[in-house]
Image (tube, helix red, strand yellow):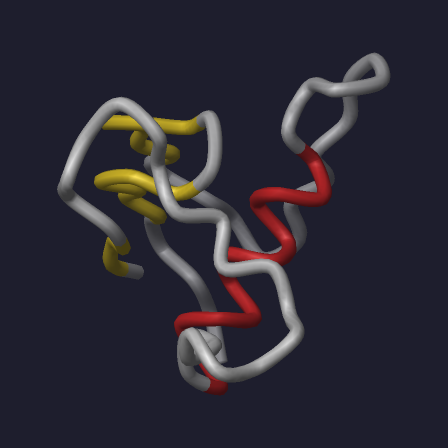
Length: 72
């Protein structure tokens, strides 16, 4: 599978973020609290389903906006 682009409508602190033209291998790097783990959790949630409110996993619901989710 090849991910061509990622659009995040609202997931944690990320809102209206788009990563385009992703090649065969993409490495996200940055300082602490830059959002690397949030992007990884977003991809995992899209592939395997978003956690329900009854589950103990973090849902990363946006605090300032009602849109939740995104697309790949």
